[in-house]
Length: 109
Image 1 (cartoon, rainbow, N blue to C red):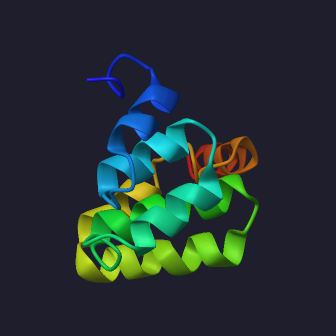
Image 2: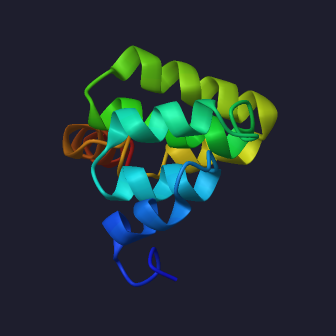
């Protein structure tokens, strides 16, 4: 419930030493990108689509674009919907990319 209530630090603390997707999510939301990656790598979701996607977000937030792209590719290989999601996710779609896409669409009209 702490995650849903925006109490991310409390949620991280409540998970203790557990390495789970939800703890990694709480760490990510609390701004601990490296901690989130370490936790997800130690969890059962280390090689799941959602695990790779979470690692992609953490990498992108740390400006590690190549790592983010690699993790998105791994997530999409496990579940194609994650690749589609990444094309709409504000974590990965920059304002510049949105402007370029809009300009390209306008040129085609």
